[in-house]
Length: 600
Image 1: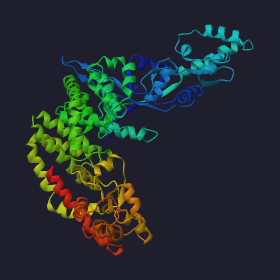
Image 2 (image 1 turned 90 degrees about the vertical axis):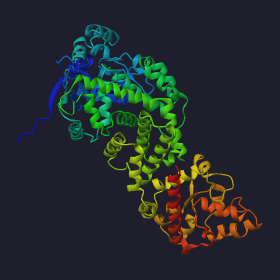
Image 3 (image 1 turned 180 degrees about the vertical axis):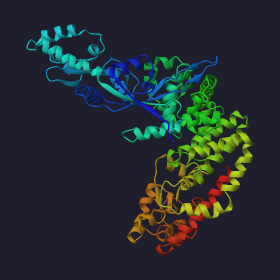
Image 4 (image 1 turned 90 degrees about the horizontal axis):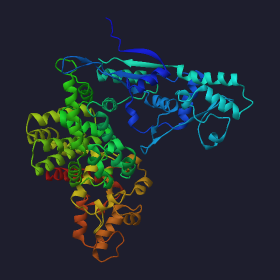
């Protein structure tokens, strides 16, 4: 059986490749993002070409031919999917194009050449004053400066240089443009999974390019339906969410974006410092796409952006146009200040007061998808809040998106279209949150020494929601301690167990963790619970000195222990009771989690 050739390999002269880029026959989507190479790497690339060394293949993907509304066919543009930094470096050094730095400022990278030493260097003030150097090779290589003019000027300043020899040297420099670059062109009729597989196989560093990167490449290369500006919006939002101070540089340096409708839509982030949900460009794409198209697989978005008709398997301009329109609508809903802040409010209202309690970005992503979807379906605000809260907590507890998240997203979003969400939620609860889950599975998942355990983090969130006070605290809450970057401590002190032969996996059990004020923890030291808790119960609560916190009432102590799910018999416990303590506390935590979930 003949296997279809999936790509072709061509060799282009550097001059021809740059000409294609200049004429936009090859689109460089990453040009919108900061140039990540430092200038020395640009110098090394030019030196490799000069010396005749290979600089690696670049990879393009031919967009499929699209059927236009009038029945004719439009040939797809080539998109550069690997080699953006190399091609950008060539346009900077040879053509004199500017690149964007991390502040999105347009800057020049000037590469200097020393004809005497046949050496390249990054141009700097010292080189610019040194007459033995050509301070910038781009005017010559781009054709803006004639060879005769350069020879005349250089030889006048360097009388020992022979004119003919200098011309020969310049011819060698000019030959850079005639060096060949390998181009692997992937067929336009390949599906995204095949493209991804080929990319991984031919990428010399073995670095996979995510399907979100393909999406960003496609939309950045699209000007017909505003994809290039949408791409900027996605990039800038994710950047501003982490660094609000970037707003000033953005306003100053990206005039095209400032003049677009997107700028006002993201400007609210300049005063936003909440970091509970800082979405990456991948998150924004995933949420906007899944919410708007009721599909969870990013490969479907790549196909739709090409105009794919899933029934006929052809490509149509009307589908491409509608995809950009709907994706833009989804992005605008995502970045909307009211939507975003209300979603964050729902997350916080479930007790997730700090990023350390959130270990799955995908849970938040689907939570936001669900919020936007239910809002679009005109659910009452109070029902949206309840359903989103429960779904997020359920997903954290069960690890719903920990494996094959795209497939799970796809299934879950389709269910919201097929029936009322409350029915779907009830079915999920019956299947995943049965008595067996609360009584058996949860206990097993609490039997761990992994401090970032999602189940334990949900327990901490439940304490925050219920305003539980820290262990042995009269006023300071667990929420206060988490927000002030406090640490979890051991109820059976770590050193106490360690000194008695317990291993790290034994003394670091999450069921042995609780939040306690540092000053109380220091006083506890490595004492057994029967020593420090026994003192609080028998002496401190009966008029004795306050050694461990400020609790002086037996009822308050009992209530504090119950709030923190600590067995009431702990004040009598010592080494031999540790295993029983862990078993009992896991049961108390599981019971609390069940109460918490159904109270949401």
